[in-house]
Figure 1 (cartoon, rainbow, N blue to C red):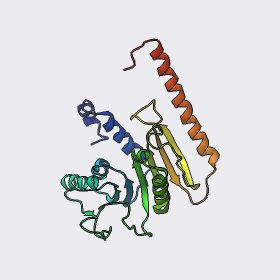
Figure 2: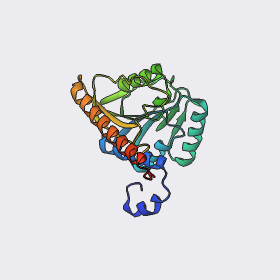
Figure 3: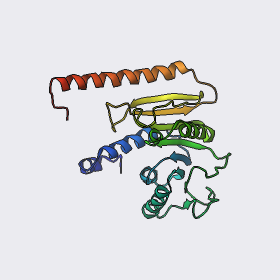
Figure 4: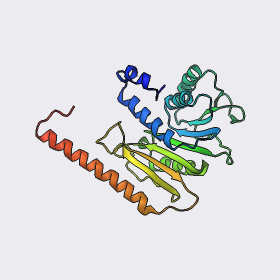
Length: 239
């Protein structure tokens, strides 16, 4: 329904900034996701599971395996209850009910970061939206390394995190990740809040291209901020 024109007018009036963010997330991932008989997704810090629900509604009839990792126990329980209610025909494994949960038994596994992942199991998409921005350097390094370890070649990593939030350290991306997109997010077009898509390659990637795409993003961001500050000085109404 997200991409059905007949629904656009009716739902547009109810959309929030958060909704627009998720719509853009799903739309971009959908363009770059590997279309195969089975789509495998790993998401870290997915809150109550809204993106999981969107994917299962979008890809109805497709086989999806979704590993949902969340660091807080309350979020794990809430996401489990939310997804059980909204995806009642999907087999959902919950770490605190089955510590050996595997994709042989379940379509979705909801688990804490210490859940042991089968090292032979590879994913097509890795996602982190607005949670690395709240971590420290050690945790960001840990999850980027996890993504790299469990991604298929040509698999993508989708990130959307504020760079002026709690975490102001470095995102140490693997040398084999090719930057496909770095652009502004509807969550904030003027803050340093990029959407980034990386694709895992078999060999090291030239960092010149990655750096160029990053520089173009910086240029656009600076231009928008300058324009808004100029309008503010002239006492124009900004919103």
